[in-house]
Length: 289
Image 1 (cartoon, rainbow, N blue to C red):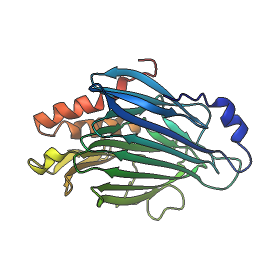
Image 2: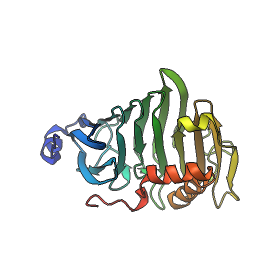
Image 3: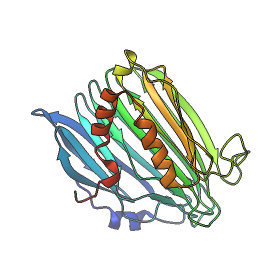
Image 4: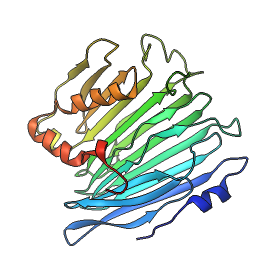
């Protein structure tokens, strides 16, 4: 295992053009349990190994400095090799801020999951502060027998302030074939992002993608979530893949998380148990757990 303590490197790398950093995580199986032979932090990413749960290895991403800022180019690469079970979370929300340059920031996540492996990408939300401009991507490659739980949440602006700008793209391939490819854009400069067909008055949006070969036999059913716009609204949709996509919007991040959790609870009982195990009580995970 390679452990890198990044604050000194991060300070040295940040200049007028921003930080360039790539963190790498790789999980493999050994003796029936999952190990993490590669745990390589960089720039603002400090990576900490958490206490394992059963055969699952857990890693927490800790922010070593303010990021992403305008001009930053950040990337995380995570691989769960054949048979590995990997859970990745974060210690706190990611805060996108205005930087010293008018350039936008990028935050790219690349996930690879091998045969009979499982990966849970369950970080805290992204908060887009006033003046921030972020382009975020997720690129996921799954083997046909792989399982994935991926959660992404955006909160547009801190309490009482206007939102920043964020453009996202999520691309998921299973067995080399595209399972999902979607783009979204919110905040100043994005066409009609706060109109009635998109977010309206909501300022938090997110989704939970679950890919599970068992859905080939028992796919989930469409399920509407929430009630009034003040409570938040969402939908659980089965995908050909096999997968389920839960999408929700809400006035704030707390109500958004409640909607996503409620949608997950509508999965068949056997699926709920598995997803609870896969989530690993992420909401209460601490870096020193």
